Image 1: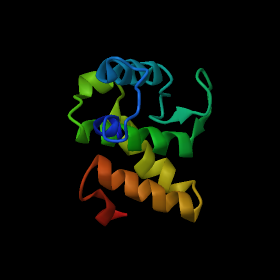
Image 2: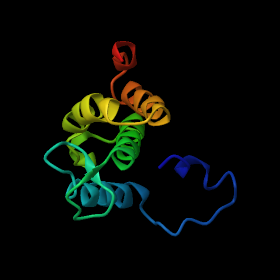
Image 3: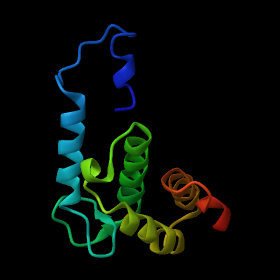
Image 4: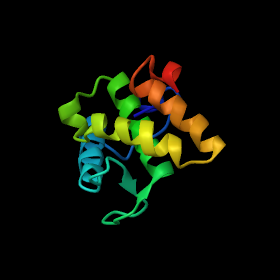
Length: 116
C-alpha cells in the first residue's frame, strides 16, 4: 500500500494484480483476530493481546485511511483499537513503545497525541 505508487518508478514487478483487493482481503483477515479488548494477539487465534502488534495494525489502518480506504474496506474496529492503544497500550508498555503508540494514535486521530 505504501509503495504501490512507486512500483513502476523503481521498475519493479508486482506479483499482486489488484493491490486494493489484496489489501482489503488482508485487513479483513486480520479483523477476525481482533480481541474483545480492541487489541490484537501475536498469532492469529491467540487469546492474549500484543501491544506492539496492536500498534502496528493501528499504524497500517491509519495509512490505509490516508490512502483512501474506507472503514468498511478496512474491516477492523479502529475506534476500539484506538481506545485499546490509548488506555492499555499507554499504561502497560515500555517508553519506546509509548513513543510509537503516541505516533500511531496521532495518525489514527490527529490531535490525540496532545492529550498523552
